[in-house]
Length: 96
Image 1 (cartoon, rainbow, N blue to C red):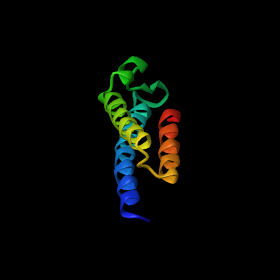
Image 2 (cartoon, rainbow, N blue to C red; image 1 turned 60 degrees about the vertical axis):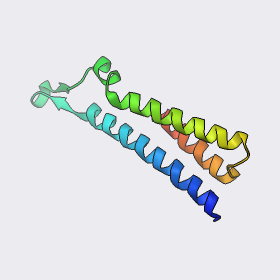
Image 3 (cartoon, one colour; image 1 turned 120 degrees about the horizontal axis):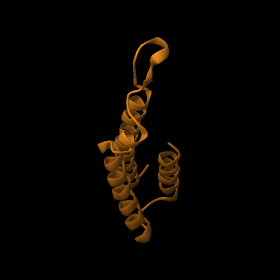
C-alpha cells in the first residue's frame, strides 16, 4: 500500500475509532438501570440521553471526517477503496 493511501487509512480509522468509542459510551448508559428486582427502570430518560455530550462529540467528529474526505475527493487525493471504506463506516455510524 502506498504511503499516501496508508496515511489516509490511518487518519480516517482514528476518527472512526473515536466516534465508535462515543457510541459505546452511549450504549452503556442505555443499559444502566436503577431499582431492585421487578422495580428496575432505566437510569436515564430519553431526553437526558439526547443531552449527553457524546452526541456533540459524534456530530463534531463526523463533520470533520466528512469535510476532510470531501476535500480529498474533490482534489482527487483519495483512493477509491479508501473512499468506499469511509462510506461504509459512515453508514455504520448512522445505523448505530
